[in-house]
Image 1 (cartoon, helix red, strand yellow):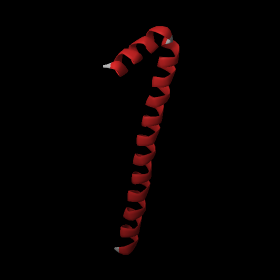
Image 2 (cartoon, one colour):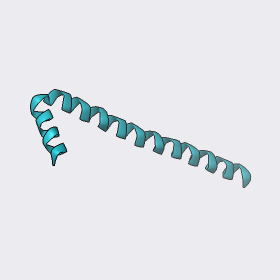
Image 3 (cartoon, one colour):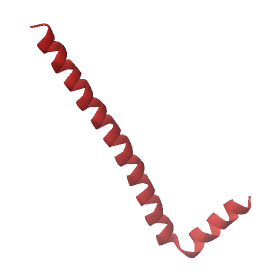
Image 4 (cartoon, helix red, strand yellow):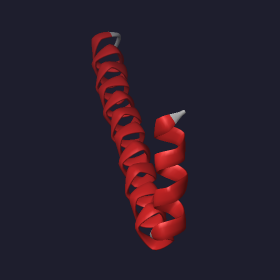
Amino acid sequence: MDTLNYLINWFKDEPLAVIITLLIFAFACYSSLYSRSSIRSKRDALIDKKHRDTFK
């Protein structure tokens, strides 16, 4: 409960800092997920290409 009170007081004192921190955190999560899916799709595309070459 102490932590929650601390966070509430921090938001009351410096709302801009809290908003910027949340935006940075959200962007980091988004970019992490995006890069993982991008790597996975590139890997799958390479595997598909190898299979197509194999069965020709």
